[in-house]
Structures are given as C-alpha cells and as structure tokens.
Length: 211
Image (cartoon, rainbow, N blue to C red):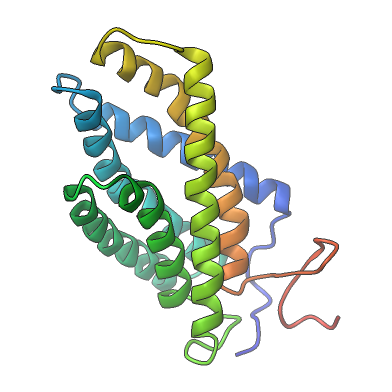
C-alpha cells in the first residue's frame, strides 16, 4: 500500500520529545495509582509495573494512530496495547525480573509493530520485518529504562532505610528513566511499524519516497 500524504510529519527531535513527555507523565500517573503502604520495595515495583502496563501501552497505540490521522488505527492500537497490558500483568505474577524488565518492552514493541503496522506497509508480507524491528525497539526501551533508573536512583538515594525512602526515590528517578527510554522508543517504534525509513546517515524519509 502506498503511503498516504496526510500522515503527520514530525522531526525526530519532536518525536523524541513527545515520547519523553508522555513516558514521564504515564509514570507519574502510575505512581499516583500505586498503593503507598506496601510490605516491601518488590511489591511496590510489581504494582507499579502492572499499572504502567495498562497506561503506557494504550498511549503508544493511540499516538501511532494519531500520527496517521486515523481514529480506527488509534483505537486498534489502544486495544492491542490493553491486551498487551493483560499479558504483562500475567508476567508480573511470576515476579521474574527479566520477564518484567525485558519481556514487557519486547512484548510491547513487537506486538504493536506486528499487529498494528502502518498505512505505508503491507500487513502480511511485512509482518516478520516489523516484528523484528519492534522487538529491537522494545529491547532498547527496557535496556535504557533499567540503566537510567539504576544510575539516577543511585545518585538520588545511594542508600535508604525503608520502603518509604525507596518509593520516594522512585518518584524522582522513575519519570526521568521512563521519559528518556520512551523518547528513544517513540523514534524507533515509528520506524518499526513502517512510517519512516532510516538512512545510514539517519535522515528520515517516507518509505514510498524516491531514494
């Protein structure tokens, strides 16, 4: 399918900024909805992760549909995001660190890229390529989030006496970590679903443009 000319065109910097702001906002909303009185930091992280799964994933799907000026694609993306959130809640039940911190981002990137696609790509013939690129985008999301959270968290609170101090640290470090990771993810997921091509010199061009 040829690309449609009315898709919204955004520079990479603006896409990154959109992801940064939405990622930080989603994190803050998830923290507000997370119970403060929990037995330990692990319980807090599980509850927070579940809420992020149901908040952040539909937002990414909506954003992809908004880029394409399509309410149908936006609602489809949000629905698929919500389904991914359900699977993530199941993953969180295992309390497995890798499943939570790596499995979810890959599930999000791969799932959205494979199932949502874009109006610039053939849905079935490009499925494998989108899946691979989506998994890469998700892996970057998880890796950057983990690294930044640990780095900023260690600087803000090198040690804490109890769960309350840990939650306070997460309130400060979490939006920074998810914001940065989300900014990079937005740039990559737009590429993964087929809305842009990335030249070796990182110049963004529509897939149907003459190179």
